[in-house]
Structure formats: structure tokens, C-alpha cells
Length: 142
Image (cartoon, rainbow, N blue to C red):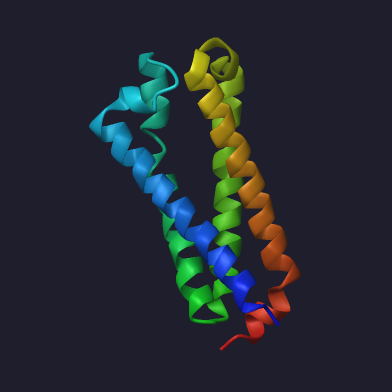
């Protein structure tokens, strides 16, 4: 059994993640200087490769929030899809940042990028762990 307060807490995290993703991409396309950690053409090309993958992550987060709020057994699928997508994106982003010195060579933008990476890692692992530990309760919903 999943406590209602715990369920609400997870839904808030899921929706917050989706809102932050939409806000990031809105800022990226409206005024890149607000969120860009670097201003090299290669960095822009790299970031421009992410909207589809981040869009999938956003769909997974919203799907998880919706199905979790409806107590649907499909919540487990969406939670695992969201956690897995987050870890994949974390890996792609971190490797680029390490190979190109983004965290250490680009001032506040690099620090923000490092924070984004850490939050992505922590939330993704937490989401996967939380979901897996409650898989029987999630599948019993409905």
C-alpha cells in the first residue's frame, strides 16, 4: 500500500521535473544566453540534439504523474521509463561536459550545468528505486 501523502509527493516531483524541462527549452529557444553553459557552435549543436529525448522524458514524467494519480498499474511502466530516460540523458550530458570541460571552465554556467546533472542523477535513481521497491503495490492499483 502506498500512502496518499507519499503518492502526492512523487507526483509533485514528476510534475516539477516536467515543468522545469519545458521552462528550460522555452528559455533555450527564446534566449539561449539565459541557459547556455557555453557559446561554441559545437555546444549549440549538442544541445539542439536533446529536445526529442527530453520530450520523451517529459511525456514519461507526465504519464507517470497521471497514472499514479489515477492509481493505474501503468504507473510502474511510466515511472521506470522516466527514471531510465533520466539516467540515459544524464550519461549523455555528463560525458559531453567532462570531455569539453564544461563544469570547470565556463563559470556560473558550468556550475549550473553540474547542478542540473546531479539533480538528474539523484531524481532518476530515486525514481527507479522508489518504483521498484513499490512495484507490487503499483501493479495492484486499479
